[in-house]
Length: 182
Image 1 (cartoon, rainbow, N blue to C red):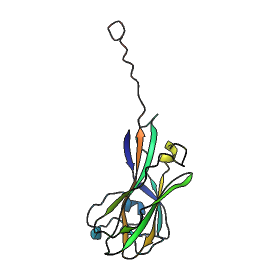
Image 2: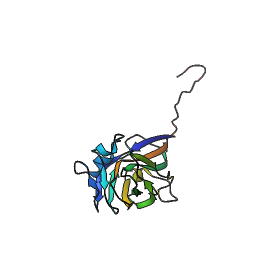
Image 3: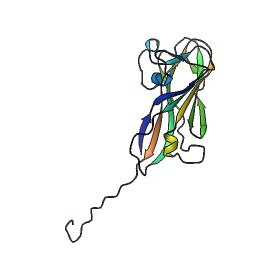
Image 4: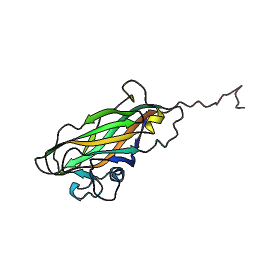
């Protein structure tokens, strides 16, 4: 088995809007890891009240996987609220052309001075029973919402999906006839 990460590459919606720290695109704030100081991060989306929602589309799977099988999709989100004594909850949904199928929350997260990474549940099927298809993988979207917020500023700086796959077995013809290759 192998894995590849796919990152946001376009905005679908941002309403009610998260604040974008620089530029005008949500996806551009979420596609690069920032492990620096939360208060000086200039590449994130943030909110001071719950109810903010954005959806970003993801990159296509740009590797040759002819005959490969998709084993699972896992969402990863790097988030924070560094205001002492505050709590928040971020929800992440996995979606594709067939709709939004999986929804998970971070649970109540206590404020912390550093970015915190949540790796959500690995999902082996696209809808609870059917295996993932390449068309679904190439149409993935990530839905992010701030569902609870007690105060301060909650931000997200990085979000992506981990795609786990098994490569196709290739057979090579190295037959040896009568002690010599023909």
